Length: 150
Image 1 (cartoon, rainbow, N blue to C red):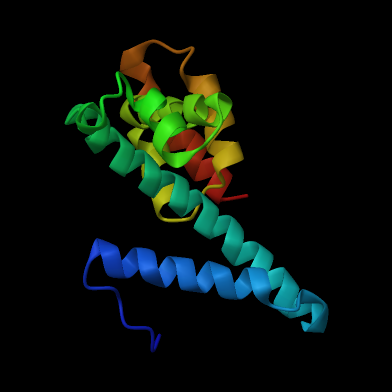
Image 2: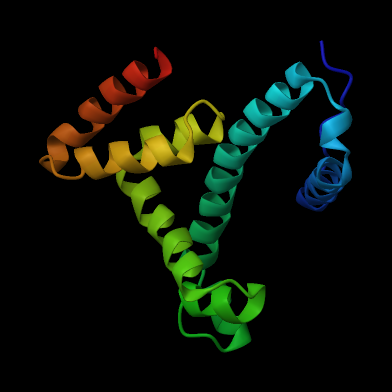
């Protein structure tokens, strides 16, 4: 059982996330054992997938509520570029996940759980997006199950 106390708010979760990633970025990885390094890499990959799913969820709500309008931006992509400092390519990638998550909720859920790497989810979405819409969810379920099964 974990001794970590879950955050009580989004602000607290963001603070914990920033502190944890800052710690790992500053840690002397050369002083870690190979097993510790491997664990860090596995957990960071899971965290990356979960982070993308979290950003996608927040960005989807932000876009739906037109939150970007409060800063006089005309789209979520423009807001991301102007207010977070990301490149146009990154903003396009982030907003593409909003569309993918809407079309492929099973992929979004698997990423949110940290079970499916983003790179795999993206490829699976590309494959099943070619199918008729009424067959997409079943195909996503099968491919996610196969990916999780190795």
